[in-house]
Image (cartoon, rainbow, N blue to C red; front, top):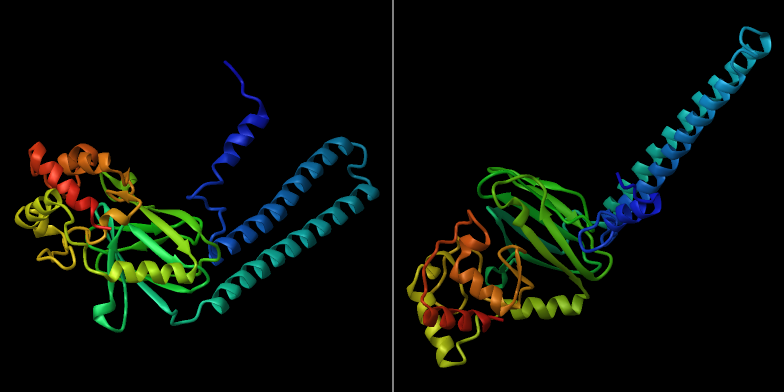
Length: 330
């Protein structure tokens, strides 16, 4: 059996701590506090692990030499008292560190954050609504979350079917979405970047293909994105795209999806108003490219078996037209 060098194994393990879906990414306030607590806990528990090993080795070394003597009794009593004191001190430090971390998060995020987002889980995609006091300014999108850096966010969580779990490892911990209940999660992104969220509770066949693209950007960039997303869908710019528009409006597509500015207003499936501006399709299953759009529209069950999008059976001419229209929805 071939043995890998210990350094290579360690490098492989550490490689899992990076990337867009990393618990140690520290992209949000909660993520930063997690990293600090993790370091503190590892340091203290590692110290006690070493202490136990040293004590065991010392006990083996002096076994029989001082056993039963007055000097041995004094050493044992001193070691026991020292161990108790070390345990009490270690637990106190961990308790204070946990309390301080929780207080930092509570102090930084107000009870009513300036941005509120409602996320509804479905098998197997995320329905996202940016809430606003003015209903006309509410923004609905799918499978892609944009957040302004440095702005506290309250995420309201719901489920339409089974239990899901909302998790963006770099930003914060997990929170379950339970049918019939409303949970919430407070976020405070602290650095810009691209992150990845994931359903962290097995929810059916395509659980692994229920991802969420997360973009944390400067406030000005977020406002520009928000205004662009509030605009209605771009009208078809070519005869081919116009033919695709007519097909989408007359086929089953309009019975499930909404496209602002068109007769399509259903809410069963993801909102397609600005579909082509997203980084992926099918909840992170495929990157947003022309070829992947063809594959998804032609045979959604081949790409993501078990999803609720039906096979329509467009011939090649109709497929070209539909893809041309969808590519213009930016």
